[in-house]
Image (cartoon, rainbow, N blue to C red; front, side, top):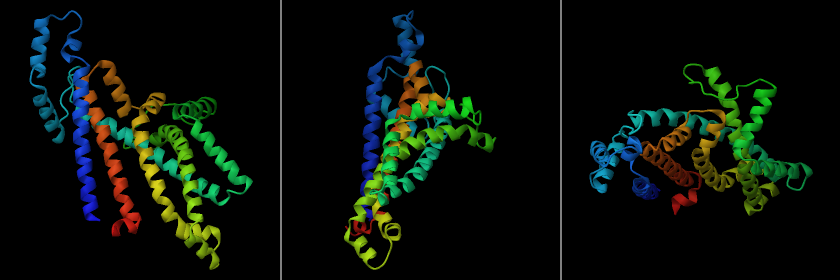
Length: 313
């Protein structure tokens, strides 16, 4: 088991290294930050001086090593455009996005686990067909559209919740919850509908296994047999989908952040791209990639903890 963890950790580190190189090279080819900052009236001499001040006249490999070494020490550099440190801004915005993603995934699990299990146990009943149809309908609705519908219903018509904005949880916990309930619901309901389909499929597969037939032959009800013996095995494929969904929500949070005016990492990325702030874009993209790789690493490690067959193997 420990060798599997070490091997996956090495894969994670190599993947992060390759991703940082790819991001740096691609954004280096996009344009010249010195020309962007000075504008269209800049002279060649002025551009050359600006490039020297920004360190862009050094070899590309030297620029990359300097940038990567700074990131390893928590220094993402200073923005060419705003002249502000990038690292603290990424940390502050990332925390907001992590609150959004965590709350949305909690809602997704609360929705998917019971509904998916019930849809599997009632798969020959009308109630099971209705649950499957609702989950299929939820899959067809994008998160931003769900957010707009929730705003129209609960913020505009009923006036129960604010339509957008963000409150720091330490400053006002109640206000934080009120502002995040609609974003969490818009993410969680859509992702919960997707996850419920996989939960249903996984539970149905386990219901056909011999060990569950044996448990039922010994007098257990279907509910008790599935919950006591089947859920652990059914959680393995669901865990894979959950990891992929967390990465999808993290990357796609920019849309929900725009709908609800949440100052997260996605909004920061959009603003940096609009300002053509290359160094900020590099730091944000690499941060998102590393977090996505870390989620995949944790999911792979969790397999060995859930399934003893992988530990023996």
